[in-house]
Length: 316
Image 1 (cartoon, rainbow, N blue to C red):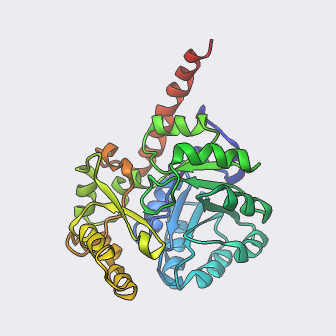
Image 2: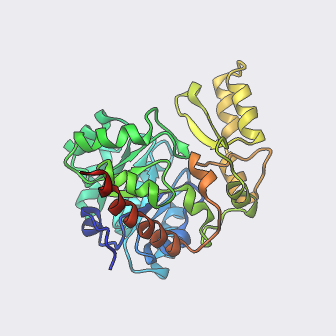
């Protein structure tokens, strides 16, 4: 039996307190099911996808596993309202949210028996979500890939833990047992990893994407999109450099927005290095092999246990 157990395990009926990030166009039903089968919480990324796609991925996951699964809803999506209804109809066990405020959907999801676990990047949002009845919170630091906030994980997690009575899942900059142990010491009751799962065997991204992650160095990522109010962390590719140049070179906002449309799909599905946006967290430099998703979940928790035990040597 795993030694590390927490309230989040009991709440969701999972073996290990490990979430797989709901990465848009990356986290499909196959990857989510593999993580859930491995004892974590696999999460399907709705991203900007239409409702029919999300429903299809939920059903793909259900054919593979009978363990709990989640769906991440990106609230900036034009299909967010449609997907919000679908997750209730399909009775997924958990919904995580990002890039916005899910307040108007929370009652509907709770009524459907769904655990509502919003991503928060500030103490104010954590307090609001707590008041509105969220089941847990994901405190995601700016080291993560995709949409990012201002605070780092090390700073954000303890403040969120102090601001809520809900279980907190730490995210951003976590890819191994050392990172997980650090999150637990900061007060978290679980961890969420995205970038580490990009190299899961069941992750269906283009081989070029996986290769870029496996070859990444410590200064491999950059943040773009701050001017439009939606900063995004991705690998430092030609597209990212071109976008940054356009962002600070006076390109009108509408043209800048068009420049980013479809860029993630080009990376995920085609491995297009010139026009594709390869989302990645700063932790990519520590991802060095492809392996089954279930092995990743177990390995991270097994690595974390001796680190947590070893931390006691500093207490006299």
